[in-house]
Length: 480
Image 1: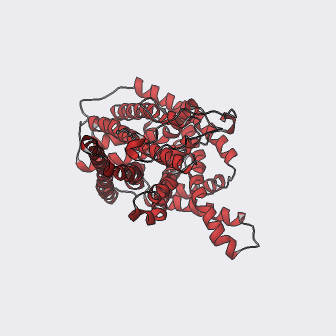
Image 2: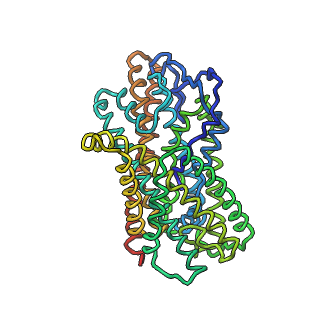
Image 3: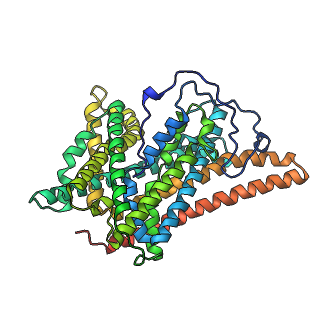
């Protein structure tokens, strides 16, 4: 599952000041622009006196991207068809990397203009609109609110998937070894107290410890599952290469859900000692996404050719009823249970400070905010439970999250911010150019508009078509 952000440990921070190599922030992921192209003049270099090395950031990035979400990809291959699913994972892996690079380039360029090396996704949107064309500057706060709202909705969706994952696997494990039988809804209600209690953890250091434990358990579980898939009998002839439009769009949602990591990229870039190492053909992003795409493709491919049309919403639901596989299911359920608090932490960090300062403090100035915070945390868990009860199938809820907020954060927002950030300085320089230089500048502007418009169109089309396909699947699925 995506957006599985692990906070880098404080022990990995370097206390040795370093002067990072100069970096040209105006390089987009496809068009290299000099400072003359942007007409901004020399900008001060990003300075990270304390930061984490590129290798540690790469490890954290891979850990954040590769998680239980990849276990749903065999179903995406079934929905799209064997070779169509294979192609989609590779294509969306490339496009996600491309758009992540756009975000990082915008962040680094705007950070250098501000002299501040720390911008998250929402602040990048605010700064991009605030320093762009005069007509869009008044919308800087709306831009930040829109991005942050999308992130919150994405996190709520991820929390619902996590909640459902724990509930469904708890049901399977209990029914496998005990005589107790109950509906999925009943199990989702039964685990509510445990999900609320773990969400009462308020210290990031403790959450980071849980995250580290979860990462170890995740690696062990994935290795065991991979070796089982590789050694199992495989089927090719009976599997379709391509299905239909609705299946492909539903698969797109599941794939984008797994790849969704835009909200994680900038916080990691902000901790990088040498920011220029985040980008480039062999930078942290491109190297990490290449590895993640390989893991996703192999997991989806092997899972589908092993279980065929019988593959379920998570590959763990197809594992044999054997004690060794039971241990794997328990470990993965524990991983997702521990990861639930991390996903909720993102929502709390984005919403609770505002609620506390604008609602709790004015109305209850003499009361401790802790009881209100715990009540708010409990309410977030309750929302996740209600969504899971409303859509109690992993094969339906995962695409729904991916094609909505996931599609906007992955394609629409990065392309929009790239245009808003880099087009104004390119346009401002046009009147001072003549002849071939002016023609070349116009071509660069036109190409940037074309590529970003294509990404925005892909995102909007995927969001609308994918949402329609997912809703049709929800209507026709028996969720009893």
